[in-house]
Image 1 (spheres, helix red, strand yellow):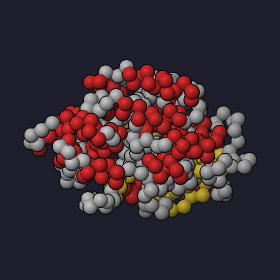
Image 2 (cartoon, one colour):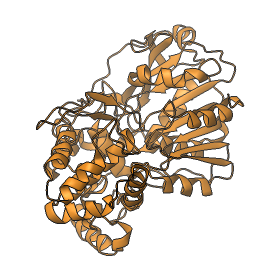
Image 3 (cartoon, one colour):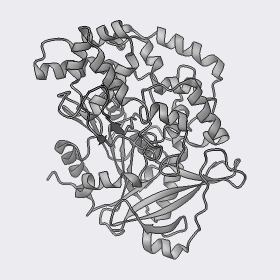
Image 4 (cartoon, helix red, strand yellow):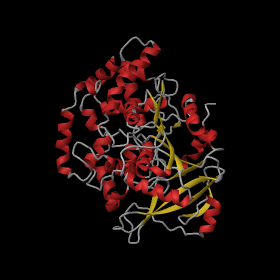
Length: 493
């Protein structure tokens, strides 16, 4: 889900900060749209020529037309990039095409076939992440051919909503102003209907056919895990096996983020116990919010901390426990300065994380929001959300007030997003292939409760919970890599 991301810390208010810390989270890359009529504002136009299919076959490994303009990937040696052209509207009612960039490793004859890696978000690119991901997945690349794609709406030709991007950057939680949300929707116009996960699933099936692959293995991180499951429920016979890292459940996104809010106290208290801090940091959160407000900012701060420094040691992130203690005792400046420094997207270009695509997809995918699905009229949403918030037991969100569930961006963005076509549910309800589920027990972006829920409904699923870890396991923890190695290679060493 959080697909988040890029965490940037800048020097501000005298606090010594990290430079850029890139953290893999979750997945959705972008595509450029070319319309047969005048393009909508902010919609990239496709103009790249189609090349001979034989050239594509030799360079990219497809056995049928669909991948064009093959060239070496600038991001990584040993990969060929090409473009997959797909319909904007798969129902055929709205003209236009999207050109999605694909990166495929050159070992087309890898003994175990193709491994499609799906990044997070929604909002992250695909091929642009190769410099960070290739070292993490190197141990699989002799056996598998690694493939990535800029899912529709992300990447260098992706959706650019300048005001929304500047306000929220890559955050799932920082709320945007209603004006920025509306301007983004207006910029997309009617094309906003065509960025659902189901649309992306159809794009992936076109990619499989273009590559000439009968069956492949999927590896999805964060939101990418949701995409992988939706594909597996739509095309089960096309999937050999599946890795889900930092799991978003298959049905729908919990727009109120209640499991994450509820887990905060346990993550804080466990870190405090490990460090013998001698106080209750969860109570410090409640006291700080009582005194100074900014509940959403504090929640966002803690979610980022769980990604970057899940044990909250202060070694690779701010000293979270100390800042909470100071704020609860009447010195909020270090905490509030850190929160302020992490918010905003002025240093996060849409090519690295598209806030516009994030909004369009998240709002379409919330088919069980308090007001129903994304077709609900705007006028009835606020009352429905208010009713839902008042029904939440206080214990379910403590140390936060109930209101934070409505104020964080996953739900508040969609409160103002105009009615649009909802995500189409897949035809099946149960994943039938072998599935490995990985999750950190300190993850506040995709909390472990989601992984447990998904594992319980996956007959051939194996859940591995990594103690002391947060978001995005692969390449960041040896126990997680060992589980993946065993699952994908049949070896634990």
